Length: 341
Image (cartoon, rainbow, N blue to C red; front, side, top):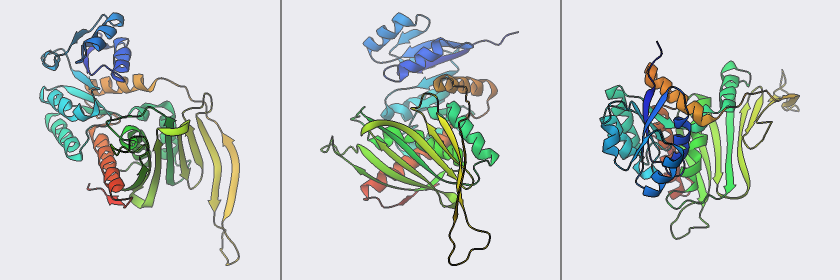
């Protein structure tokens, strides 16, 4: 006997939230029952293309429906924690868009509530569900790259300029979540410097250079900007044996593996240095699929199995702690800020 579709709701359907509606409304095994948004225009626009769910401005209506098992929260970032808290208090599982919260203490509170209540708390770290990131994780875990030494993450473009958050909070969550996932550890310290050029009076940084330290002196350098002539979405992973580059803007070469490295000679003399090794370049064939659909599939699977999903609340908390440490470092002129774990 086939299982019943999983009842879901989306809260916050403007901007990125409409993509959640689009994906869930066409997903098998899902009953998108509600779409909640305060804007009459947003609700009216989406209702034209998605006749299945009920549209409402009232969150209480959504949470009162016993058939709703999970809720996707895609409201503005300042309200993420408050809305997610209401969902958890109503006894429902929740997928919260990134960042999980704007303060570490709020993120920690959500994690504690979810753990205490046996609820699924997942964070919309979308790129964790990208097929190339999955392939990168396999490369790291298999040992093909050797020991991962450091990562370089560049997420640049010209626009979209935000007025309620800086480039660090807007763009860096993607790279922080990927770095944590690939290294299998939480960040322990962050140093960051940035520049404010477009909104000087508001003090909103348009570009940020962050260095994130992990256990074992492993590093992730994160460069984010919405004031750059190139659209760049690139991650370089440098290992002791091989190196890999994920270029998300490439059409057919999204992942490249370089058999390159540096090795000390067998017996190092004063007049000898390290040897540079250069081997083949490999472009693995990767079957692409939409990360958002894969994220939704992971959320539904977690609801049904009760197993923690990739990008769970603990992942979201670690990213918020790193973002907060980066903000404090920016305010301190780039001084390294240790993260309280």
